[in-house]
Length: 110
Figure (cartoon, rainbow, N blue to C red):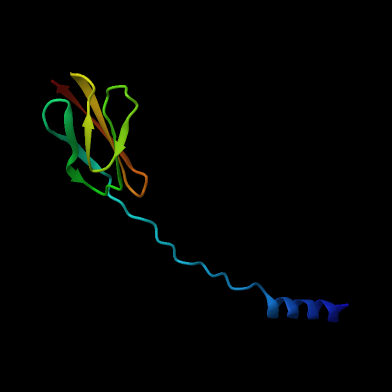
């Protein structure tokens, strides 16, 4: 019986556990995005752009505040309002680390 026990321990020590290989993972390092809303143009056709960008910006999404349901994506977009009025434009920035920044700007379209 003792021989079996010794043999079992010897097998356990010789085979043991396989070495654990922990791969080195690298995680993205991001600076939080920030910016202001720039606007140019006259009349109902306006160009909106990301002004004074800071940090890492992966995506810029725009809501033009006119309840049309139309949204755009890009650092610079053009939008045509259907009628004159005052609107609150919303810019949402996202980076690759899923950090989100949202800002608004009230504009008057004539």
